[in-house]
Length: 452
Image (tube, rainbow, N blue to C red):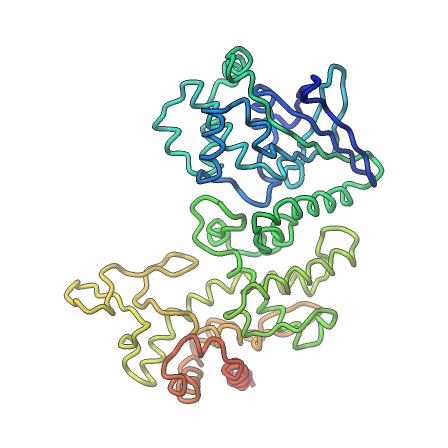
């Protein structure tokens, strides 16, 4: 994919170009024809966009306009908003654009236009209808697009009378050279955030777009990271990014307990289960303060680096707890599988009860077969309270004890205390267990006492 292209903006009396400059930002406003739009598809990409487009109601509406009223497209769509740190003005209304850093250079708004119009071009070029029907998301589309002979496609878009008459609005924002690259990046993120607010972009998607979660991605096991839906519309992702963000706060609670997060709002362990949106806010606040302190996008505080580094262990520990909790429960009170919220795998396929599963359930992060499927409200007070097993040593957050062995040695006693104090009181309701602060406080005490 080229990272440097020259496109021509239309400059007739009806669709003239306009140039604006304000506070170090340049903006060119105009329209492009089908051929130049195709060049942008090949070069710009959607990495800079906080969401990935997918086939649906919006793309179908755009497609309908392209098929039935192509001359009206310029009036019916906002078109594209493109970001590039360098936009060189050439002669004859041409502009040279660079897309060297896809994290902030590319399409900021207009991904559904890119997808719908690109699919229309492929359809008109004679691409297989079966292949086009299989395209559901941007990743599917760009894979098919890159299989094309683009020279032939560009020629078609120049010569076909209907296609060559298509006109798409475009805005190009670039740096005037009066600001640093970091300052321009921040402005781009603000523009993208504002443009996408009208389509309810979730906070975690925008935080990911800003690079807040890079340290989470680096810390996670690669198997888990590959399954996280960091960006809305990511293909075949099964793990919600908010679950990872919430999990990432557990080590930060340990820092908070030792007074190492004094400038941040207090993290409530209950939110790890009951309010993951607040977890997103907490993490964003912490990362933003670190960036402002450093004057760049890097995290340099060794305590934060070590805390986020512990995220590599936590999905494995979560799954260990998830698998071992029912056995520990049964040692205190046999019958975990008889609870209405619990499903149990029937490997012999003989049971017909609603509480049995004919296929083995799989764990959330590593997709390993297990026996029980149940709400994680039961185990979250224990899991979140594992922050008490962490401590600061030599300016780093570390485990006080080997976590898996310590959990194996003490889980039965923890669950026994938990069962008699809360589970029976809440009538075996996992929601109440997961949302009651007293459960977390009690589990912290029991875990802490097991270490002494």
